[in-house]
Structures are given as structure tokens and as C-alpha cells.
Length: 233
Image (cartoon, rainbow, N blue to C red; front, side, top):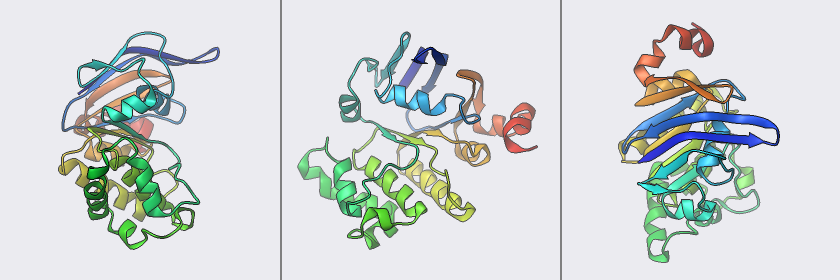
């Protein structure tokens, strides 16, 4: 579904992403784990067209998207839920969700909205509430729901557990599992390595802009180096 080969991204003179390659197959949850500053979020921004790689290739559904606009990438079904939630604070919950459907045919929006409310019943209860008054966990649900309104073939989630209490982190990961079981392919960037590896089909470890290790979620969960570096074991 997604094939990334030897991408290199710079911030001015800083070489942030160095020959990164990985793939995501249809039906998988693939996790990118690593310390803060490892290049995980930069990788997602490059895949979604917000940043540009100077080399390599990015193919989605067998089509080269490396020079495609961010809007066209969304239309093709690659949808990015960014770090920090980035909801429209002054809009209602439902208005935020409608904004997520801007690339979709009008006759599909009502059905997509109902599916979002099935996954996130709390959003249905608060559909007319101003988004900025939601709790942190509810705002994360809204950001994910807005992404789903674009009817993604591949949903990229950037740090969905950031800043949330442990009980809310557990809820968010249960929702991610439910989305996967419902047929959504997911690329997950997450500093909470334990939670990410527990649900990942496969995973890649990033360090200082490079992929340094890969394997199944189960393999990396029990890898001694990963445990020492990211799991406190």
C-alpha cells in the first residue's frame, strides 16, 4: 500500500531524515517508535506532502506521490492526524468533522459522520459543543474522527497519546485497535513504545533520522535493546 524508499529531508542545514525506507501493507498497523527528535513526525509530514524529500521515492497505492500536493494526497486516501490534535477550537464538534470531509462527495458525508459517531459515541453526545471546551482525550478523539471523515485508505496517527492521562491513553489505543479491526490500515507514530508495539503488526525503530531496527511488534516488544532504550526493561 505504501512504499517509502531512501527519503532524505532537511531543515535548512540540518539533515533530519537520512535514507529512510519502510513499507506499510494493506490491513496492517505499522508503528514508528523512537525518542523525541528521532524524525518520526518529520517522516509523516513528508508522506503527507507538508515537507519534501530531496531524494528517493514515496509510492502510495502504486502511484508516486512524492511531488503531489498535500490536498491531492488526502484525495488519494492517505490521511494525516497531526501531533498536538490541531482541531478548530472555535468550531463545534460537528463543524470540525465536516471540515475533515472537504475532499469527499457530498452524498457520502452523512454516512461517514454516522460511522465516526459509532467509533466515538462521546463525540455524538457533544456534537454541538465548541471543540475548544472538550477535554484533551475528547479533542484527540475529534482529531481522529476528523481524519476518518476523509475516508482514508491509510490513516497516519502522530502521537495520539501525547499529554493524556493513562486511562485515556488506554481508551485511545482501544479505539485504534477497533479502527484496525474495522478495516483501516494505520501508520502510527508513538513515543509510548509499549502501547504501540502491543498493537502493531510490524514496527520500525528510528534514531537520529534513521531506521535502525525493524520487526514484528511482538519481536520488538521482547528485543533487549528496545526494552532497555524505550520500555525501561
